[in-house]
Length: 400
Ligand SMILES: Nc1nc2c(ncn2[C@@H]2O[C@H](COP(=O)(O)OP(=O)(O)OP(=O)(O)O)[C@@H](O)[C@H]2O)c(=O)[nH]1
Figure 1: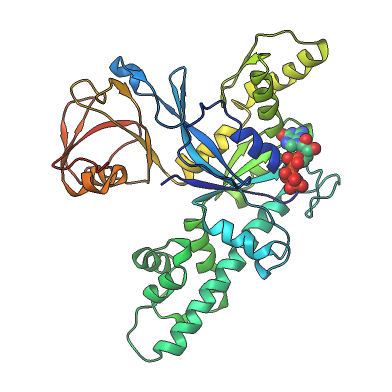
Figure 2 (figure 1 turned 45 degrees about the vertical axis):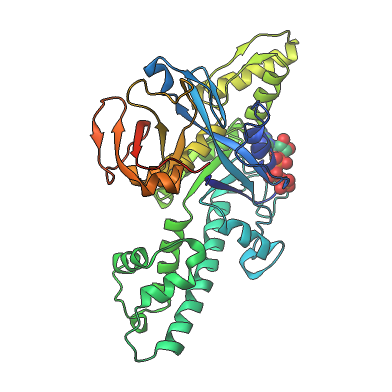
């Protein structure tokens, strides 16, 4: 039910630091929506401005936390290990890497923008981070092309001369990537191709594979180590390079996020994840104070450490998710008088999708919804917006 974001990157880019910082949270025990014993899967959060204060209500989240009017809504973060050149051919952790990738909704590619690690993750100077970005995209594209080619082979041998729809065969072959036959058809046509694969040449196939990959595995680049001067230079250059317009970039310092969370836990600073500032509230040595000053310069300049921002870019910008609160029109609260839930829904979700998301029984018996802010009735096919507060009127209750 939860969104799953995959963290990818070659060795030594700061992926572990990012993962640890993002999943290190002071959430009360039992407030996790899922438990896992796999150390590479952790609970991270996206921030949503809480709707409770607007309704003069208290917020006691069933999952996640609410801090100073900001809801931290859980997502799953997966540390996808094994990105090495040739991964799609099964080198290194290859196949496991691809299996893990399959289970993600979107990716955050952690890239060392300081240029101090080469393509294999060894120490160097002056490495161009563009190589890493290209490499991951090429790896993914090669994998998609393999699967697409298998689908085309099957189609050719099985359906020669018949009227079988190519989009159906390809959608089935690529079902692990979560693409429907309608979407497949749209992508094929949008590429200017005919629905007759015999007319596609090698380049057409490559471009098609790339386009399907872009749509089904959207990606944010976390430009890590922007606390270093080299990374700042690369940031300015790469984000103004038109070849990279198709990607979302977020400047990040995983190191700073980890340091601030550690200091917050130790009672030295008061810091809320994602904020662009923090207060020093404990005793610090001169050395610590200097370190914190450097971090402050970075977070104020870039609007935060970028760890939260990268996750939120993945969920809200590239996946286009919205967060919706269940409420009650007369009081906008559940029977206990508090806001308990906040759900992430896919782009374009309707009242009915929301109802089914909560429980299939509520979905089946759905009559309509009520927008709790305006008190107006909304239809079952009404498109919901980010931060809507909706009461669902259904003939059925959720089964216990
Ligand atoms: N300057 C700077 N260094 C960082 C940052 N994040 C991580 N590092 C450093 O980069 C090095 C690699 O960090 P890790 O988090 O271990 O990197 P990784 O990508 O998980 O590496 P593997 O475990 O080898 O896959 C460590 O020395 C970190 O201290 C950052 O934001 N800024």
